[in-house]
Image 1 (cartoon, rainbow, N blue to C red):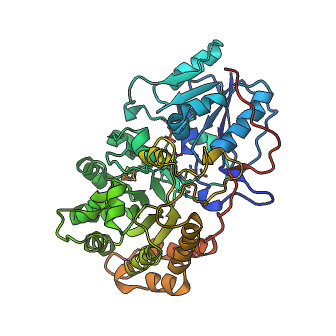
Image 2 (image 1 turned 60 degrees about the horizontal axis):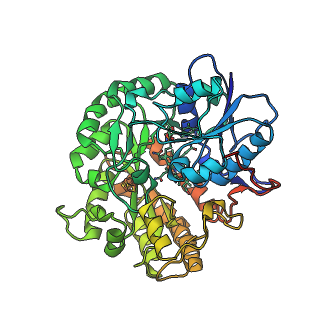
Image 3 (image 1 turned 180 degrees about the vertical axis):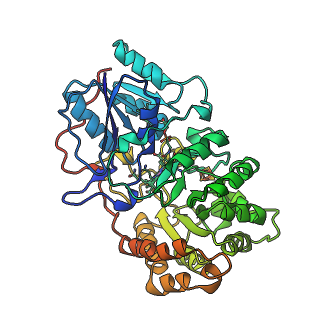
Length: 464
Ligand code: B12
Ligand code: SF4
């Protein structure tokens, strides 16, 4: 049996290559390949970097859906449907919007694939493919199998992606993770993680632990860090800010090779953080009681141990004012963040935020991710205190401020942040090209189409 796995782009703009910063290894595709039983001939195409040979013979197609890639995925599915090939979709968006996905796929797999995928393949073999699959329970993460051979010679960014755990227990109302994982968090068996890193480390410049919250179980991660240190690899990850208040933990992260962490600050406004259910960010009960002080204390710990911070901020919650954008950029500069993102809030379907905005009649599109008129970085809802245009304009202004030459130089040349006992040459050398890349990309993604803008015709629906 022949199976074609496809990782879709968010879209294609006429005459332009895909956004380079997003061309990382397609881990969902490698996970599906790794779970596929032997005897299946697998082909893999990454829509972000190569054309899809629709006429190549295949018995079925598996496509991973995210909300931003859904429209493009349905275009690809339409091409295969026209050729009589069944399409199976899974992933975040398929789980958040299964009824929609069902319209454009012969089969929809919701949730994680580890338990259920072998059955899908078996049904395909026997011609008994079902419309919907969902595993009875969440899989043990010992079941993760990643087959990176499918990547071949594709020109991915030189970063190896690895899962150490899945999910997050926090309840942030805008976040698709808490919906998808229902506020659960599990880690992989530590020997599996260490084994996977050991087998990939030759020639790997940097690992990215793609966990949504690497500090989801600090006690367990503390057990991982000493053997990880012995592997002598460099890595980055994502974590919630509460972990940075534990200086001992931060020191162990640094000793284990952690160069930088992505932290979602989201807002400097307490009322906004409360509205998004993220007031744990204010670190109530910590030594510093004011929110700015709280962030500052955590960030000082990270700086002291040479861990860079990628800070993310969102705008569009009800208590944002025009001043909030510059305040966030200034805070990010003062705190010497390595890089930072200033984006509008995104209502992902299935999240509490989405339900709330829908209930208040504030969504500007029925389904922004499918609407041909919608473009990347357009605010798809009506904010309470600002206009959509003001949010877009001021996000760009915040990026310009943060990636201005004085800011890049002051952050990069800051003594305390970069030249203390924890000086790391690799991190510092890479600071300059990474910041320059962001500087040139301040508006580069704005207006990017969802779906291929040159794709002709209407989406072809699957038989019901
Ligand atoms: C690494 C990562 C990135 C990387 C690279 C991604 C890549 N490979 O190209 C970068 C930084 C570039 C990135 C960019 C963006 N990302 Co991102 N990213 C992630 C992250 C952290 C890990 C993805 C991953 O590899 N997971 C491991 C795989 C194995 O897990 P999985 O995808 O869930 O797959 C399992 C199941 O879902 C299922 N499954 C998945 N696909 C399929 C397909 C079939 C057929 C089947 C049967 C099953 C199945 O089976 C798998 C095994 O159980 C996730 C969060 C997360 N925890 O997953 C966010 C996440 C996917 N990203 C997200 C977003 C929004 C983006 C951006 C749009 C952000 C932006 N700047 O605007 C861009 C879009 C880029 C693009 N699509 O081209 C959202 C998507 C939300 C949604 N509703 O769709 C997520 C969930 C983060 C979040 N907190 O909400 N991202
Ligand atoms: S802490 Fe991060 S991953 Fe967890 S629910 Fe909040 S935004 Fe999502």
